[in-house]
Length: 243
Length: 216
Image 1 (spheres, chains in turn cyan, blue):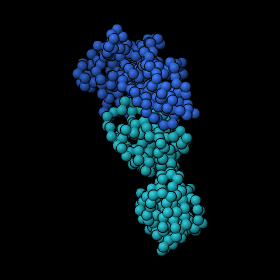
Image 2 (cartoon, chains in turn red, yellow):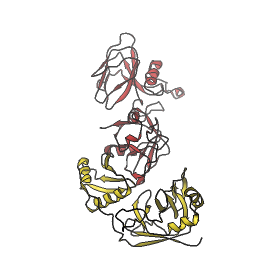
Image 3 (tube, chains in turn yellow, blue):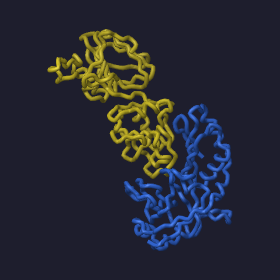
Image 4 (cartoon, one colour):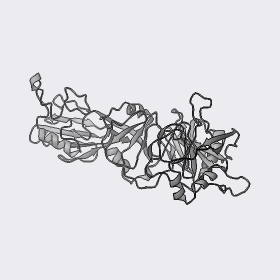
């Protein structure tokens, strides 16, 4: 966030049910607009987004990210490309989005695919997110359908409870194979995204077998391996494809 | 030869046949390119894992392309005899699959010498292939070699330690209880892997392996 507007706050749909502890539900003032912003980028309606009061917010993407802007209609300024209210669009790494003053209304909501990362407080839905885990395609992207790497980069994955030191199993968009024959077993490396027939990748960690027989679509960047090893079951993971 | 990117610190070299893997592996082991810390041979590939500080994987790829294959390591690590009870759960099914009597499968399995082509899967597991006669200028499998054996359609979640098994053109011995999809033809009491032994693995490249039938 480049222009930290004191009236831009992180909001979700609040924490109902704690009133007897003296804690109000709070949450987004315009719940429908936040829910719409979330729906447009494929989030649960209750995911956290940024509530902007009377425009003025300026954000810069660290990696490619799908966003949407809903609520009070503002002019949207992008350093390149175009975006419109009430429709999802991508911000590329380094690209900046600025919200002008709304023509009508007061509060505008920025939805971000995967949610916005802040620690949970009292069970309010913040997003436990490992964003921008760098991967490099290879060695076997040609074993998958042509847009599989894009699917990997655009998808939100969740760490399965069936994860251990051998590998972190992920649940999320499936990466479909273009070749269906058996791959002769080959050497594996830590960080390899091995894809078994059901299509959800497993990120191999330090105790991985020396060889494996499922094709590897991409490998986690060396510098991001430690972060991958710290991902918790249930945590969401976003990948960023490096050249 | 295809050289495939495998993250920031590894290259996967793909070749056409197991013989190419063995020749390339021998050449790379004899003279490893600087920065290579681990070489993992497999059926059609050689994985080169490099030190994390290696900045130029392309140079390592060039060095690999420049290597001329060497004859694979001569069998100098001695003879290993593996006593086997041929009472494996899948023996009858394999016999049916390939159209040979079970007794003939046992005869062929014990008829000649096997080489450890490469290792992998789990500690101490070796992929054994029939030794190719070197008398001819056109190497071909020996007459006792078994036809290719398909893996089981659904792998077992637990294969007992010591299981002797077949798959593709390979035979192998499960060093410890593990999941597995190979066809089980027998069982040995010989512990092929023991971390407290030096060397821990009995099945390693250079060892000549013979299977010997013992009474069930």
